Image (cartoon, rainbow, N blue to C red; front, side):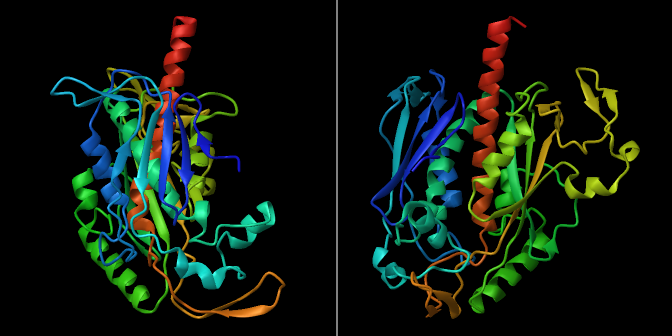
Length: 369
């Protein structure tokens, strides 16, 4: 199986299955000398972990990261310090129940990766979908938390929040919101009134054994002008790959997104202005990226997520031989993936931004600019 490594200079390789002993990863390319706050990494995992509220799956995991390599004890105030060697880590699966999936060994669940994995490999891991399970993302959150701490030294902040659940949307344009604002409600929507309505909708569909999707907004601020690599490694192309690699992603917009396609060029153009310490733009319909390179404005993405495919309602499908079968509605799942997808979106953005920051640094060293 290929495709388990992400990044160019700052690289993450993940391993493990949803109902195996553990998941884990190797981060290669992390600079030496970073005083890593391991408690902050664990806090990121706590935002992603299952069982954190009545709005999420009932699967309960501690998701405690075990560091295997790439760190040494620093001074008392520094704690763990990166050595520049590959950082290896694992997160144990403590609530795995592989037997729950025995009844699906010859059946393809609707809108899951069961059929496509078997079509590609001739077999599949029935236990919760194996590598196709969203639990694989636990490794991305660990690596993204390391990347976030590097970005902090560069003055870059990355934040995401739930903007919409089904047809319930925030009445505000995309902007940066603090972690405290976002996490003040289990839905992770920073608009209290809207968050309450979202929670009611999720609770209702959960009672009905159904699921809903929606959209998450990501804003990265403090990114300097100049990050990104023409032509095929444009910054927004790498961000797109990162977001589309997340389970359940169905759409992606940068800046004005689809609404920009309704405008004329004269109204869509971002005029340049003098901000004193730098050149900026009067509007940000470009979403902080022009020609595939950051322009110094906030990077703004909107990511659409589909409803979770596992529903607690009877359904129909076929077995390996094409015979019709009736499926029971059972299992542990999120009625809405969005609250737990917020840290995933942030993690993937951090991985991309750190990778391009290191590539930019290498370019400057090479050409002496």
